[in-house]
Image (cartoon, rainbow over all chains, first blue to last red; front, side):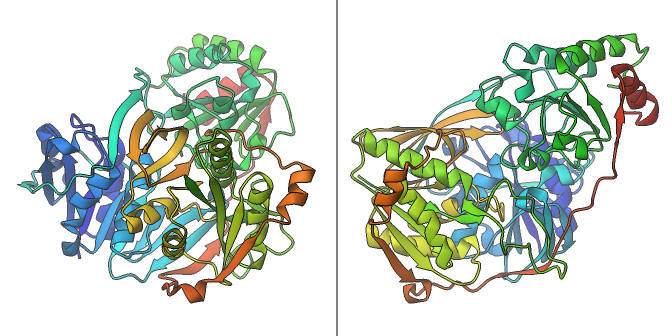
Length: 317
Length: 249
C-alpha cells in the first residue's frame, strides 16, 4: 500500500491545508508520496520534500499547470494512479472540485470529507451538516478520499529530505480556460487556520457595521468569518462564509456576533474549542452551542468588548 | 440549446436530524422532504437562461424512489418543460447516480447540465464532477455567476480564496452555489399547469448501469454533544471568563 496525496499550492508556496492532509494521509499508510502539479514551482517541491512524513515528491512542471484546472490535473494524476492504493487531497474547494473527477474515471466510489482514519479502508465522516457521523468502509480496491483539514493537526514542515522525482506532464484540455482569480489579500490570519475567529451575521445590518467586528479582530489578531445571511446580504465577501457549504473552522475561540445559529452555520463552527455568542435574542439557537452566551445588543456590546480587551495587560497572540 | 437539470429529494434543510437508535441511518418517516436547496438554484438559472431566449428546452431529472417525483413536479412548476424520473428503491452513491445521469445525457443530448454543488443530506459534493468525467465534458463547479456565450459559458466560481472565473466550452456541466440566484416560488396557476407536463418514468435497472454500493455504512451515530454553556451577565464578565477560565485570550 502507498498513498498519493495531491498538493495544493500557488506555485510559490504550499497551501497550509496540505500539511493537515499529510497528517491524515500518513495515518492511512506511512508510505506517503506527494504529487505536485505546477509551473515554476521548484521552491514548493523543495518545501514539501522537507516535510518529514513525506517519503517522495513527484513533481510535474509544465506551463499548462500555471493555473489549477481540474481537467488538466486529473489527467496528470491518472498517469500515476496504478501505483497507489489511496489517492487523497484536502476537502476544500480545491479537492472537492478535483477528486470526484479522478474517482469517476477510476470507477471508484469516493469517500468525501473524512474527519478520522479508523483503518485504511474505514473512515469517519460527518453527514447532514455534521448532525450525524457515519462510519464508512470502502470496498473498492483503490480508494479516493478527501480529508477535512481542520480535523487533523498540520504536519511538521521541516527536517525531512524526501527524494524529488520529476515526472511528465499529461494532456491539456482545450475546453476549459482559466480567466482570472480575484484573491482578496489580507494581513489577517487565514480563516481556516486562525486561532481566534470572530464572525458576524445578519444582526450587523450593514457592511459598514462590520467595522465593529474588524476592530475586535485587529485587537485579538483574529480571522473574520460570516454567516451565509451576511454574505448573501452583501455585507462581506464569500470567502468569509462559515458553514455547511462554506468553510469549516475549528479555532480555539469562536465569537459569533449577531448570528442566530442555523444548523448550516453550526456545521461550520461547532467543533471550535470555546464558543462565545453575542445576540440580543436570548432564544437564538446559537446559545445552545455557546460556552459563554451574552444576551445583548451587539452595537453596545462590541465597543464595550473592545474597551475591556484594551484594559487587559496582555492578550495571547 | 437544451438544458438538463438534475434535482434531488432530501430532508428539508430546516429539519433537525434525528439518528436512528440502531445506528442504521437517520429518521425519515414523517419528516418533511424538499428539493436539495442548490438544486433549486440550478433550476432557476436554467429558467432564467430560457427566459432570456438562450435556451429552447429545460428537462428536469431526478433519481430516486417514487416520491422523488415531487421534486421534478416542483421544477416543472417553476419553468422546466418536462421531467424524467429514474426510479430506484435503494439509496445510491454519487458514482451510481452519475452513471445513470450519463445514460440520460446520452439519450437527451443536452448542451448543458446543471445541478446543485452538493446535496445537504450526504454532503458528498461529487455527482456533477463525476458526470463531467464520464462524459469527458468540462466542469464548472460552485458557480455563483453564469454568462452564456455563443459556444461557451463564462462562470464565476466561489473558491476558498475568493472568486475565480473560468470559461468552459459547451457541452458542459455546471454545479450551482446558493448565491447563483434567488429561486422563485411557483405560482398556483403554474403548479396546476405543471400537473399536465409530462414526466417520463424509467427504471434504473433498465439502464444497464452498475448501481451496487461500494461503501458500507457500518454505523450512523450522533456527534458528541457539547456540554451546556453559561450565560454571562455583562461584557466585563465575558472578558474575565475568556481570560481566566477558558484562558483563550
